[in-house]
Length: 273
Image (cartoon, rainbow, N blue to C red; front, side, top):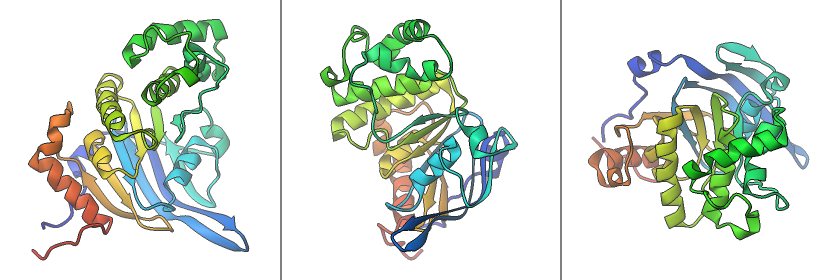
């Protein structure tokens, strides 16, 4: 195999930084021990760039999203948004954060849940729901505005959660395993749907996933973390052109990128050149 691919300097220079992580160290207590989740992690996400983060369980991926969103303060290191250093308090509300579960409120309808992000930003509930209702068709939810979460399929619940995440139109979106709990067919359908939606929105995205195929299909760059403590082990610029289609999963470029990531993760042996 050829030497590992790294991000193209030309590609990265063309994108101003939306998010910059510098030398982040984050620890936590487990019983009588203090463990390190992230150890000197440095990375960037450019304006309009889709970056995926993969790594073993416990490598600090979700911890990093909590830090970027402002929910957690690291032990040391800096988080810059649009080139400005920030505290955790200053980061609260600056990004749209979709966590692993859809977290829909069971007593709210589809539009009521979808409007929550806008309400949290100060929009009146009736206006938030009006704006959510106008977008239902884009998310495959037209006709389900008055339906409660228990009546929705898993895929529809995820679409409603995405609508809630996107409506406030934040410049940075954080996605933590958004399709991890779905069956394979629904996951493939929503991956294609998200790829098409991102082409329209072009927000900066940092996606955490355990699914290497998902990372290659969706992202511009994929970053691989080491087992705990999380450090950057490998960086891959995805070879696939945009817009993405599911047919690309059979292409030589996809197969090559997938193999490079699996090798970096230690799942495949790196053959001698």
